[in-house]
Amino acid sequence: MRFLYLFWLLIFPLLVFSYQQSVSFKVYSFETSNKDINLATVLKNNNFTKVNNINTLNFGVSNKVHWLKIEITNAAPLENYKLHIATITPDSIAVYILNGNIYTKTYIGEGFASTERFLNFNFKTTAAKTTTLYLQVIGNGQPIVLPLSIYPRVYDVFKLKTVLITGLIYGIIFFIIVINLVFFISTGQKLYLYFVAFNVFGWSIIFSFDGFIKLFIFTNSIYWNNELVAIGFIASFISTNFYVSEFLNIKKYDTVLNIFFKLINVVLLLQLAISFWHPVGFKIYILLNLITLTAEAFLLLTCVLYIQKKEKQYFLTQLTSVIFLIVFGTITQFYFAGLLPISFITQHVLYFMILPQIFIQTFALAKRLKLIIKEKSRLQQSLLTSSALHSQSLIFTLETERKRMAHEFHDSIGQNLLVIRNRILLLLKKDMLPTHTEVLNGLAAITSETLDEIRTIAQDLRPSTLDTIGITASIKLMIDKIQKSTSVIIKLVFEEGIDDVLPKDTEINFYRILQELLNNLLKHAKATHATVVIEKTASQLKLYVKDNGIGFDTKLKIASGIGNGLSGIKERVNILKGIITIKSYLYKGTAITVIIPIKNEK
Image 1 (cartoon, helix red, strand yellow):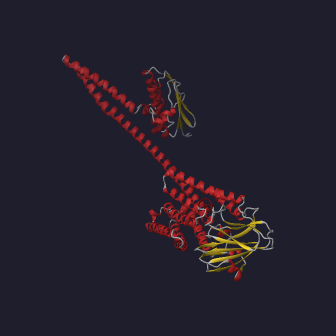
Image 2 (tube, rainbow, N blue to C red):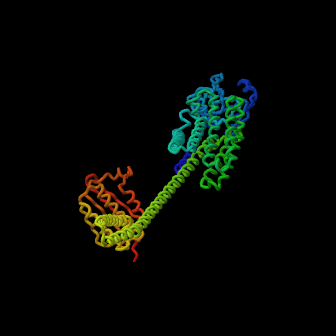
Image 3 (spheres, rainbow, N blue to C red):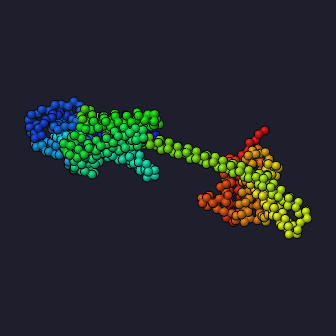
């Protein structure tokens, strides 16, 4: 976005010095309502009045005939020169120049095919000291603005830097259009599509007043050259209304303003429909433009002020945009109405009205996108935090329930079974029939077996050793038990005890991590040897489990969600605020490292 502002600051001075210094000349003018008057009558009556400042040759919307007499005094004799009129608004201009004793007449204007962007007349100066040109400009209800310049044809008024500047402007606009189209396709938000529409129609207005429509598309159609400008203006206003309404969420905040947006869009469409009726409808369209722009500016300003507190992060950008629209939109209307003279600002007023809107709104959209991404990131982080808290709560609840069930099995069911077995053993000491003794022996055996199973289940649910002999001894007992029940040779490296290293309520998580790692090893690794290393430093507790099994593709496991208990292990590692590293290669074994931070309380 800073690049766009820098670009604007650079382009302003370049535009100022992009034109050739013209040859000095004097201008005389008069106007008449008689459209049938000819040059002979003009020369005979000689009603011309000197124009002291050629920048005042802005006659506004006119239906009169404007005659200009141009005297060129400091031009080289019998040399090629060009009369350049940097406007596309007059329908046609008749240019008269003396050739010998006869004035020849040439038409230039929108209604005549041309290979040049603006109105130009090429001529050769006379041998006399002064060369005189006469211009007949017929007003047809269009703005008549005549920024005149005369220069030798050896130069080109549109030098290379002018072409470069125009190319840069169009390139930037095109880039912005493409980017917002990509955003629309990727997000589906209509806001970007509305902004693309504004860019396209705003670009079409600049394109028209730069003379490219006349040069490349409608080379000799007065009707469509004029109509395309009307379409560009109306469509840009409508797309602006849709964009602003969507951007500021007017539909949510105020239904009345939303209705006003719809009403002004209807009025704009009616105004556009009237403009197709040439020439009367187009004259009405031009006169209505000032009213429309005023209503548009007032509505946009009202919206911006209304959302000052509701959407304060966008207030300054939108206020700046509206101010540019009001200031330069007013200048545009006053200029076309003939109320302002020709100057650098007025000749480029469309650039100053449209380009800042594009750049400012691009900045606003970028800011909006940044806020959306930031909010999305915050929500994702919140979701991850909530998910982690949920996992912690779930595991805590699970362990609590396991502990409760272990106590129930051991203290309640186990005790009941023990009582039943003891009573059976007491009965066996009494004299009984052989058949009764056999039955009681069977029941005693079943009761003893069930009691052993209950104790095993209780131990699996919650190792009682954690509460009695501590986590260090519990881990060693677990390894010994596994070693006796499997052919896998497990080497335990456990030089220093870890009792009281972790809080009592989280020790079970470390125990379960190791338990699950060993279960996975026995179930899936097909290993013959494994090493378990537990190390403690001043700041961390490290668990390292390595086997010589078949290994697995870690990327495939993670992508497919197949965990073999890995997801549960990762959740417990997260609860302990640790990190887990898994290195595994097919048929080359697996090495898993878990590092848990610990507090050094001394």
